[in-house]
View (tube, one colour):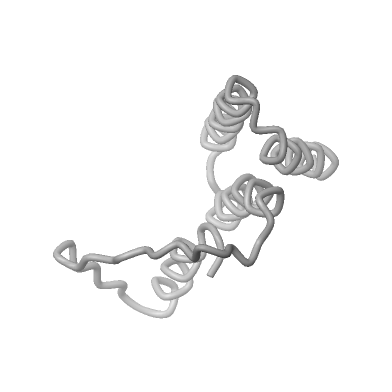
Length: 101
């Protein structure tokens, strides 16, 4: 499972036929005490995966800009908290996105 995988799989399922959503369903998320991914990978994927989900859905330019606004907020929050390991992943993701565009 990766960040945004549920959104991606829902889009694929919807293209194959009708997607039925039951708002009464509940999902329990359990976080492993020993995460398999390093924090830099998680923060990197948080930015990259959401960007590609937007692109996959042919999101209008304003949604891409709002994603950028969100990235700025995430970076500022982690700067204030001095979360340098997370920041390393975020900055790497931003640089990769800038190289693509």
